[in-house]
View (cartoon, rainbow, N blue to C red):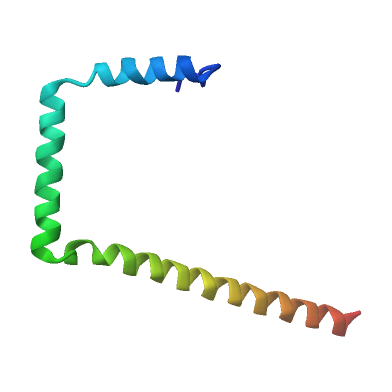
Length: 85
């Protein structure tokens, strides 16, 4: 990754140059792919991507569960150490 430009004018020039490299055929392919994906979303009413949200929720719940278990283990260890002291 190239270093960040020193000022906004240079930044704008870099962006303009990068955009100029994008050809008409690439834009057409991207447009067609997006059109296809939007159609899939519309037809399935988003059902094909619903699992992503559910997976994220499962990951959050699993993380909470593990955190709670670690907290219990630390408490057990503290209790044990206080008994042996």
